[in-house]
Structures are given as structure tokens and as C-alpha cells.
Amino acid sequence: MGSSSMTSHCFVVVTLSLLYVTTTYGQLSQNFYAENCPVLERIVQTEVSGALSAEKRMGASLLRLFFHDCFVQGCDGSVLLNDAPDSERDADANANSLRGFDVIDAIKTKVETNCPGVVSCADILALATREAVVELGGPSWTLLLGRRDSTTSSKKLAEDNLPGPSSSLDGLVTAFANKGFTPTELVALSGAHTIGMAKCEFADEGQVRPECNLDSLAMTALDFADARVPTTPTRHSSTLTSPPAMNKLSEVGLLTGDEGQIRLNCNKVNVN
Image 1 (cartoon, rainbow, N blue to C red):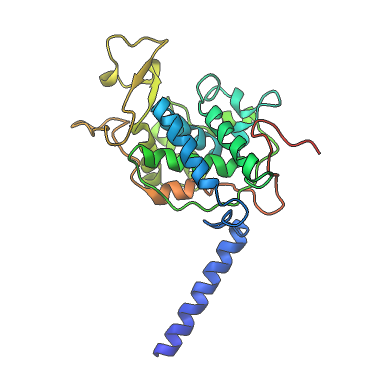
Image 2 (cartoon, one colour):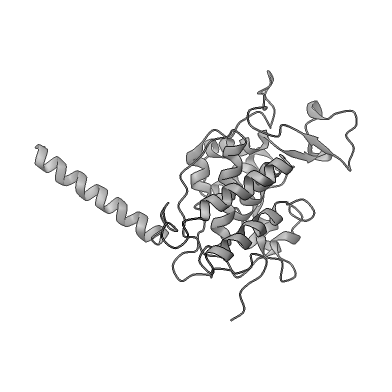
């Protein structure tokens, strides 16, 4: 094939690829808010940094909150809603364990002051999660922006979709495959357990401390720099070292264009 033909062929492939991305993600881009909310990322960085300074564990909590949002209806901020009974927050995997809502609310309040009605809660959660991971010494990843917020939240969907701590390997592989993830990506995303704390009843025996009881928490590490891969691998020994896997997670089930809404308060649906 001649050079001109090769160039034409590559141009067509690239053009079709870009068309596919635009069609799939509805004009999402890394610079979605560059003109209408240029202070967004600075606000997110300031608020997340302050939250982690006050409590380093909050980074892991934000990461878990984001995963639990994306793995149910998609990365649509539905996990943040609490204005109706039987929401995702009420699911067994979420009730009295999900944290970080106050950090997202604080960011949203400042964003609304500077850019009213522009930035979705779903995008704020995605940005806050990436910022938290980076601040804890983890990897960054490409993050497309322009998500819209869901107007619904379902306890049943959360309980049907979120894998539990007692899930078998086959069950985990199936649950992640249902969301389009490979076993390799499952391992990469499971590396989020490198940091944070878990209820003692779910901790590995080798990591349980003498003072640990069913009402307390067992700690892995509070940041990626402090995490140590043990000589004998455990379910927590992988690390979150795959930005492509996080990028893929951040694009699960997105609402774009005229879908959903831009919530003015992340905890409740806008009333027309």
C-alpha cells in the first residue's frame, strides 16, 4: 500500500474512532467545564486536600463511594440521593458504611456559588475520587467530563449489582463481566483495598489486630505509599496500578446530553 493510501486509511480510521467516541459519550471531554466553570478543579483540589488533611482515611472512603455509584446504575451520582425511601444508600452494602457525602456536598456548595447550575454531582464525585487517589500517592487517569445526574436511586439495584465481601471468585468475575470488565481489570480495581479500613468481621485473619472486634475496624493502609505487598499474597495485596481500568470504570453507564439533570443539591432531585 502506498504512503498516500496508508495516510488516507489512517485518517478514515481516526475519524471513525472520534465519531464513535463522540456518539458514545455525547460530547464528553476533559475540558468540558473549561469555559463555564474554570475554577472547578481548583475547588475540588482544595476541598479534597482539606478533607484528607483532617482525616486521611477519607481518601479511601471517596474511592469506595465512587465505585459504589458506578457499579449500580452507572457513574450518575445516584448513590448521593437520599430524598426518597429505598435508595442506594439504604442497601446492605451501603447503609452505615458509605462515607464522603459531606466532602461532595462541600465541593458542590462552592461550585454552585461560582458556577450555578453547571456542574453535575456525578462529575464532582468523579473528580474528587481521582484527586483523592493522587493525593494518597496512587495513579491518575484520564477523566472525561460532562456527566449528567440521575433522577432515580434504587436499593434493589444496588443489592443486585454490588459484589459483597463474601462473594466467591466466580461470583466476582461474573459481577465485573456484567459491567464489561475483564478478570485482569477486576484485579486492578480490587487493588483499591490497598488503602482504607474495613469492618473487622470482613478482614483477613492475618491482618486482624488483637483489639479488633466486630464493632471496630481493621486497617490495611491509609495511602498507597504506606501499602506493602506481603510475601504471601492476600485478597488485599494487589494495588490500584491500572489508570485504564479506572478510566473504564469512570465511563460506565453515563448520562449525557439531555438525559438526567444537573442537580442543584446532590442529595435530592431538582423540583421543576
